[in-house]
Amino acid sequence: MPDVPIDQLPVDPTVAWVFPGQGAQHVGMGADLVDTSATARAVFTAADIALDVSLSQICFDGPEDELTRTINTQPAIVTHSIAALSAALETDAITSRPAFVAGHSLGEYAALVAAGAIGFDEGVRLVRERGRLMQEACDAEAGTMAAVLGLEQDVLAPIAAEHGAALCNANAPGNITIGGTLAAVEAASTAASEAGAVKVVPLAVSGAFHTPLMQSAADGLREALAGVEFKQPRTPVISNVTATPLEDPATLATELVDQVTNPVLWAASVKCMQEAGVTTLIEFGPGRVLGGLARRIDRGLNTINIGTAGDLTPEGSD
Image (cartoon, rainbow, N blue to C red; front, side, top):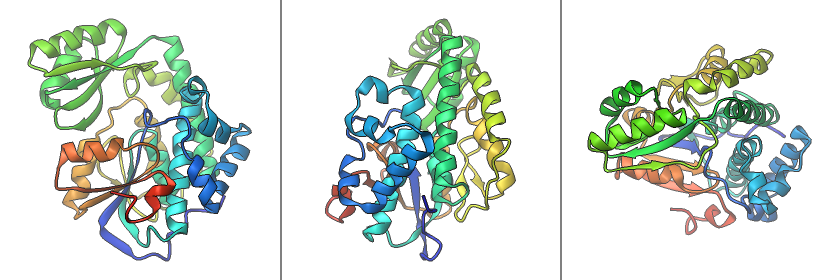
């Protein structure tokens, strides 16, 4: 699988490319791209070979319970995201490179591939190992997550901490997830409601992602990353952990380890890109989750979604 070919493209300082995380998957994802794009087909084939698993068949045909296994979901989303980007470049739906790239949680692996910091084959193998390690951590200690709507981060953080829970994703103003043990999340959810949360929604997840309960997964991922040599990103990558640009290859392995146990600062990441002049986010991959969050962060942001063959024309994307 060749690197994403963006070196010769002019930079558009108003555009960022963003890549979704877990929860965006669905059976059938990528099938129409493979039918219409040779480069998308090459990406799925490369994933099957790199993983020695028919990931493409799981994406296209399911069954859903197989696709939603964390070990499959994570590489599936990265593969679809890079396939969508490759098809967009092949068809000239995209003719410039972005000022920044960013990915939500596992989407950061797709962002690193897009930026040329890591090859696709190695990226998809790493994210599958990440999924395996996270599932092992979930199996070892039961945890859960809940979405809290209507409270800001500075209010919710001490409430969560008081009850032994932690912030997982700061997705948008008034849209934050918390995680921890079942008892901790239940107690923190009740306290959040009492503090004025508009709504608290338990999430159907297998564990408390981006919390200290994932420490064993972070330790295992550190070992997996020990032999990986990252290249200089051709485009700055916005960190999930700090919401600041990453440009030094030496920092990338640490970033991928730290994001397993730390909250995803997505709203702050988008604001960082906005402050640098970005006005348009192009989301590559399944679903439209990040586009929806962008509208919650700032309705003035322009969002474009590219995840299907129909999105590869001006009329098909919005």
